[in-house]
Amino acid sequence: QVQLVESGGESVQAGDSLRLSCAASGGAFKSYNVGWFRQAPGKEREFVGFISWSGVTTVYADSVKGRFTITRDNTENTAYLQMNRLKPEDTAVYYCAAGQSVLEYYKDYEYDSWGQGTQVTVSS
Image (cartoon, rainbow, N blue to C red):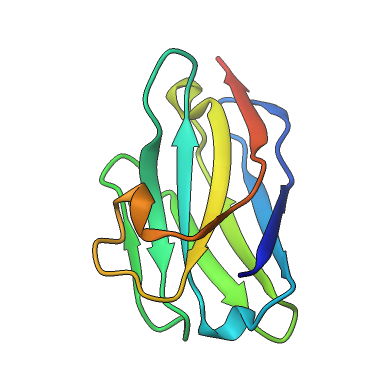
């Protein structure tokens, strides 16, 4: 299994942009699909987006579609979540997760490895 570490979270104003990173180590990152999830205070963890191991396929939750973009650099063992036009409702702890056999990409149990999370706070 790979180990994941997220970074890049901070406090920003509505309308700002942020890029989160998910750095992997200890495994063949290029063979892992990556999902991004978030959890707001008092709410359940929710799916944000997915990128396949090759980077060819990306999927996004409706709430972030058109604002967020997921990419990956397998030579750097890192996945990215570019977040534009941030809204206060995007405030949450953001997690990246990795799994080799992911069928239902929006289900957190499909992923084997998780990072510790990074806090994103968007104020109005």
